[in-house]
Image 1 (cartoon, rainbow, N blue to C red):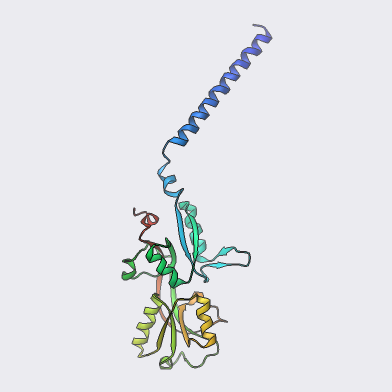
Image 2 (image 1 turned 180 degrees about the vertical axis):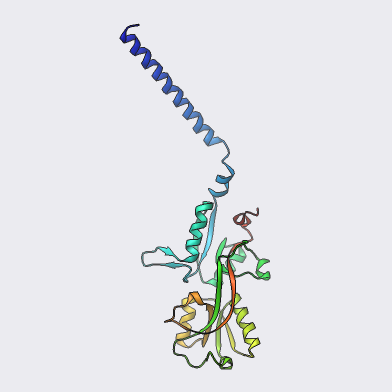
Length: 242
C-alpha cells in the first residue's frame, strides 16, 4: 500500500467512525425524547407553586424589587432540593390564609398548627421555627400599662382575623380578668401598626419579629408557638403524600 492509499484508508475509517458517532447521538437523543423521565425529574421538573406573599420581616422587597427575608430564603432553599418554581401572590396575612383554605394559593409561611387548621390545610412534620406574640402600643402611649392589665379594659385591641395570636390574646385576657374591645383586622402589618399611631387602635397583637421598636412598644407577652409552611389540601404532592 502506498502513502496515498494509506491516507485514503485512514480517511475512510475516520469518516466511518464519525458516521457511527453521529448515529449513536441521534439514537440517544431519540431515546431521551421518547423515554419516560426519571421519577425525580417528574416530581421536580414541572411543579409550579403559588406562594402567599405578605409584607413583613419574613417577606421583604427592596427599592430594586429584590426579595429577601426568612420565609423567602427558606423557600429558595427548598427549591434547591425540589426544583419548584414559585409564583408569588400578594395580600395581607388574613387574606392569604383564606386563599390557602380555598386552594387559591398552594403554600404559605408563618402558620401555627391547631387541630382546627389541620382539618382545612396540611402541615409538614418540621416547623419553620418558633415565635412569640406580644401586645404592642404606639410609642409613648401611657394609657395601657405593662404593670396593670386592667388598663386594657375597654380598649380597642387589634388582632389579625383568624390568627392564632388572636386566640392567645383572648385566653390571656380571660385569665387576667381583662375585658377589651377586640377588633379583628384583615389589612397588612404596616397598616395595622399605623392604626396605633392614628388612634384607631389602642393596642395591636402580633409577632415580635414583625415590629420595629420605633413603630410600637411591647406591653406584654400573650403566647408563643411553632410556626410552619402550611400547604393547601389540594397540593398533598408538596409534602410527598400523594
